[in-house]
Length: 275
Length: 92
Image (cartoon, rainbow over all chains, first blue to last red; front, side, top):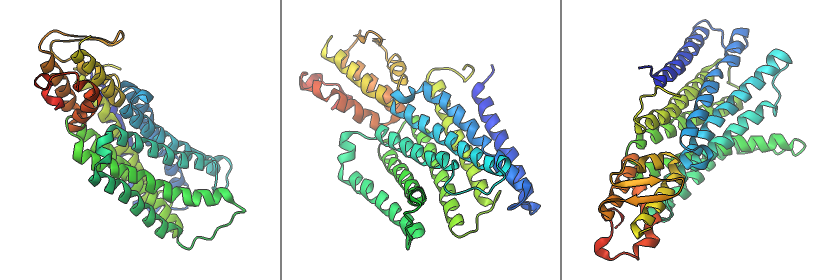
């Protein structure tokens, strides 16, 4: 019987492998950085996020969409992926259509900063799904809930914002300069809190699915952190290692969202052979 | 509706907040439990405490201990209406 789940997983894997090979060819040929081939790769690999985001939107409906906490987590992760693609496409628009260097801030930041907000909402929905009034009040959980965000926000501040010079003639720039590192630290803090709660209280069929989603969020954070770090040190390269990290993060996030469909179909006694 | 049937409604509702329509589908797997969710109609046809235990177990298979905690919180207000020897094991 036709297994739609396997088709979706296969398609995602194919997209990933195509861009992985493309990236590898650019890397081996020394075509990363200021080359038109690199810019083409940069413009196209966001299709991985587009695929994952659209698949995730359909999957979230099966879990109740916005009306349930797991549905919301899947929905916001999917929208986060789509927001990343909006950012990528906008950047490509500057390069290919307007033929100008990408300004900062730019319209692309609507997508990229939007994804930070959406990932935060996804992680928050997960925490709510994994906790009760009593579990959150438990002393050992309160400790982690307080410590993790403080620690990560402090590290981000130290790495990216120490000695920052404020220029209030460009308030949006100041907002994003703070918003990106602190916003990203915040969403991964929530992801780590969800991880602590998962380890303590989560079990059953959903445990590996939720843990994989948190892992995907972690990979996204690594990619985001590396982007900020490389840009701040002027070492970021078009079609460089950071874009490979983003491609991988999009792929893993896509697989993590598809797992929700797999579990849903298993619970319903189906084999993924319907829409 | 009996106290146990009210418990079932509260437990399903609390799980529905987390996992959406999957909560109702999982409840329908429980033996001796008839669920007409559109009318919020619950009928238990066997041992009531055992049926509530089976319902909690079905959610526990899906989500682990957190499902049990959620079920306990949902049913907490009704526990006082039952004698101690009639309480479902899973909610003690």
